[in-house]
Length: 315
Ligand SMILES: NC(=O)C1=CN([C@@H]2O[C@H](COP(=O)(O)OP(=O)(O)OC[C@H]3O[C@@H](n4cnc5c(N)ncnc54)[C@H](OP(=O)(O)O)[C@@H]3O)[C@@H](O)[C@H]2O)C=CC1
Ligand SMILES: C[C@H]1O[C@H](OP(=O)(O)OP(=O)(O)OC[C@H]2O[C@@H](n3cnc4c(=O)[nH]c(N)nc43)[C@H](O)[C@@H]2O)[C@@H](O)[C@@H](O)C1=O
Image 1 (cartoon, rainbow, N blue to C red):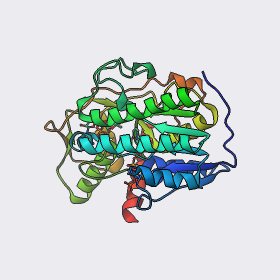
Image 2: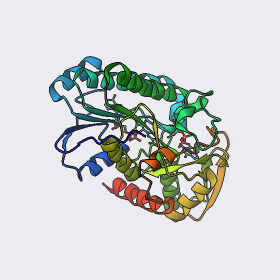
Image 3: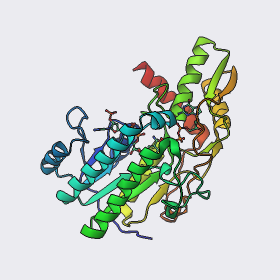
Image 4: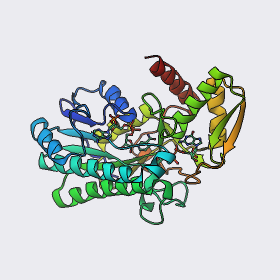
């Protein structure tokens, strides 16, 4: 296991995607570190624009990079915006990883996703199961882009000796999530739908799919803590899964969200919507060996996420 200390203190740290849910959590977590934080607004720098990215990097020359910027969304967004998911995510990964190489970035962390693993991978899914079977069709474009990113990281380590690493997070939730009614992930989608149903007095709420699939949910501030710990201690071409090691059915999750929100009506299942992968539980033994484990139980995380939703809606 590659436990290699990296001194973060005093370094310039670029959080790509700082306005996003994970980016925001990384900015919060990095406030506890003595670093010079670098961010750039999307309207000032579109990370798909290679020449603009190379020009910005040649001036900014970040010493450390968290590559959290991506085109991200839930199962329906992935399944309908297939070209955007593959183009944007390949472009962003290619531009930033190569710009980091051109500018001698000391450390880069690429954020992949649990969707890179085969649809029917043995559970819990080990890091070495990548590319051992067919992907989940609903998010294959996104998964291919993420696999391209992690393979770039591996290739730059091999050819140039770059200290670039890749982490594979499970489903994430918490402050700064995306609540788009169609394009959000399940957690944000249901928090919003149950909240609106409570306010409107709706008799029932539709949950997508059969409710049978299982998912693992990691609170985003725990994710950010894992990322900072790994950037300081981990250096290897091996992927690292970041999760909780616990899974819940979508039906059970819906009931827990309804309870958290205070919705008392009926829950029905809209099977015209896709289920996606039956299970996506990550094997987290590698990160456990590195001394990290998630701290926020789902019940507590749901309360925090709902409170964040309410305050973000009020803002
Ligand atoms: N959310 C989840 O459940 C999971 C997320 N991940 C990964 O974590 C990372 C962060 O995800 P998350 O925080 O949820 O996603 P968000 O959508 O919340 O954040 C993504 C950020 O990237 C920015 N971005 C997207 N495209 C561009 C672009 N072309 N140029 C500049 N900035 C861009 C977005 O800016 P803007 O808002 O202006 O569009 C946004 O700030 C991603 O790599 C994702 O794949 C992995 C597993 C699970
Ligand atoms: C992080 C991960 O996230 C995505 O994969 P996913 O986990 O399948 O995504 P999801 O959160 O959208 O769905 C999880 C389950 O939940 C069910 N579900 C019920 N009701 C709603 C609902 O209202 N919205 C959504 N989105 N799903 C719902 C839905 O039918 C499915 O069975 C990809 O981005 C993938 O690439 C990826 O990386």
